[in-house]
Image (cartoon, rainbow, N blue to C red; front, top):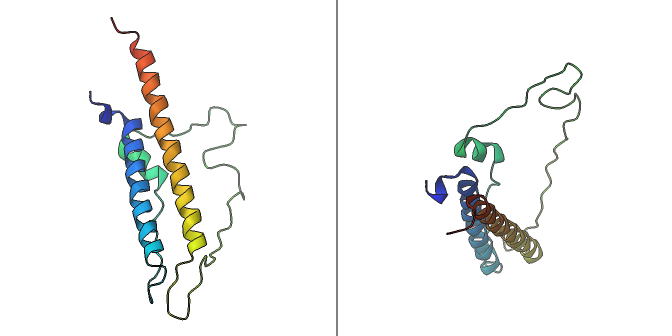
Length: 134
């Protein structure tokens, strides 16, 4: 079995590819900060449920006692979603705000470091499970 066939490593690989692509898109935004009519772009956030479905079986919670909270949580706990524009448009039609782009770049860098740390820890666990080499 190849390392990429393990579902966890497949998900880590997908996340790293997504983060790399997002960093490329954000760098294009920064490079075009003074281009008239340029609209800032970003990638659609990955759907965690879809990633799980793609890389392996999905385990669903089961209510084992009538007193337990059922799948989906309690009633009336849904969060209210509000749409808010997060950037401005200059008179030239450019919607790139450098401060916002730098925050997104920093978030992407932090996420990438977290994923590479998870990868390293997972490899360490596999090495431990395989035991010492003869």
